[in-house]
Image (tube, rainbow, N blue to C red):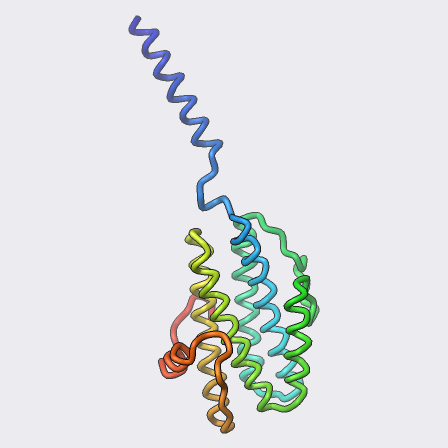
Amino acid sequence: MKNALITSIFLLLAISSCQETESPSSEAVISATELETLLFMREEEKLAHDVYVYAFEKYGLNIFQNIANSESSHVLSVLGVMETFQVSDPLSGSTVPGEFTDPILINLYSDLINRVDLSLNESILVGLLIEDLDINDLEIAISETDKLSISNLYANLECGSKNHLRAFYDQANAAGITYTPEFISQSEYSSIVNSPKSGCNAN
């Protein structure tokens, strides 16, 4: 009787162990919304990079090259999290300027490049617009995920975008031009640009 009871306990433990092994953790399962946003962020970070590289090549202003380099790090950070969740890169690692799969970003890239062509001052405003948009999108993305690794990624990217916004704001001030935010609120914009640069894991 005792041996039969022990055997039954071992069988129950074995079954329980198998069930736990076969059931993926919540961190490993990505929702449709999280997937869509992660793919969009991968391309949105590349868009920022590509526009800044274009602006630097046209005007030679170092701020564009410096922030483009930072955006390259952002892209790698997103790709790293995508790999963790076994999400394929929609661009297959492409670094071709202006290449995207999302039609919204294809059109946005074209519009921003046309604005960059107008003048250096317009290019600085484009930089402010991109970071304004990025911060807004990242804030929404953070609110839509319960995955710590994804929310940490977005928080680091947002920190970097705020630093970029501050840098472009300083450049705009020096040039005597004013930007009115289109995505985040005026109060949030003012709070960001009037606060010191932050240290981020992704700059």
